[in-house]
Image: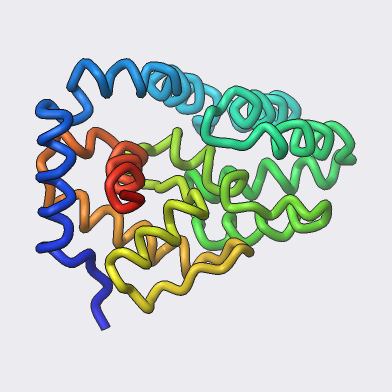
Length: 210
């Protein structure tokens, strides 16, 4: 079964959004909203901090993971200190495992890295969608997706999709299907609504909730 966002419903959301913000995410009102998230600055920092060469230094990379999570407006204030303390208390072996998981997610064996990241975060009950998906979403903003539970559930409900099935525990199967859903849906709307995958899901968040 092909997983798609219904075009008719999507176009209705697009019309509603463009009536309010004629220039899409380039609209002055939207620019003021998005500026608060420092998205472009976070992308620049993440791409520099986690390229293959930079990731060769395990301690610096682990510290940069904490910086991204701590600075991100998309991660809850409740999760930030827990993640910081988690990384700080890792032994050398586990810290290397954490970094290797991220490197695989960004530069190679995505599924292996994703599942390894979930495994190590699960130890301290930190296997949350936000913590697993935030760095990839900044590193490759047109390829990866940030999974915000409420938004993901509302999108699936609005478009009456039975697959993928959302679950609180992150799984590669859901991530892969949800990412495909977002990327294909993005191609059906005006480009002003999708400068990044995060922007497109933000557009959906603002419209399906209504």
